[in-house]
Length: 195
Image 1 (spheres, rainbow, N blue to C red):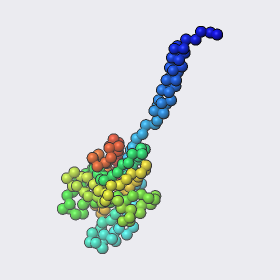
Image 2 (image 1 turned 120 degrees about the horizontal axis):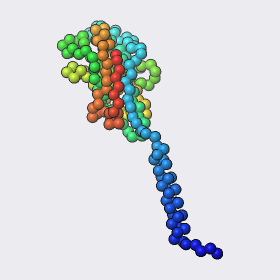
Image 3 (image 1 turned 60 degrees about the vertical axis):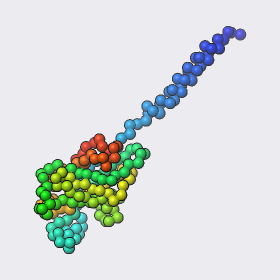
Image 4 (image 1 turned 45 degrees about the vertical axis):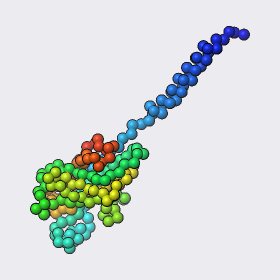
């Protein structure tokens, strides 16, 4: 029978098991794909005027105003972490929109959740109202309650305009403002859309 040195054989076998264990633990870490979140603001190809919105504004004493769909805002979330929106602010990058003393150029709008390809502008689908800040040239949408983001969440951006304001909006674009109310995971990418 050959002489066996037990400490040497055990040491070699233990090292082999340690190496295999380390390899098994590290492979999933190396194979895990990079997780990221992003948002996109995309101008709609068809800037659709919402049906009957001119008649509605005429009835409430704002003749010449109407609702127009300007874009979609999409959040893509690739983590399981819960993310909620409380507020979204869009920065206007273009000619200054005059103060509200000039009522014909006062900007306001609403966000509607996208449930189908077609915009369904009903109270049930409206998730936030927009408020215009004329000094900062920003439109802020405040949600009625914190809005939980799914893996893909898309909103329709609808603005109340008249012909003069509609023409002015074609001379610039909006971009998403990074604010503390925007989940941290979405505070890196900067995108714009032209009206």
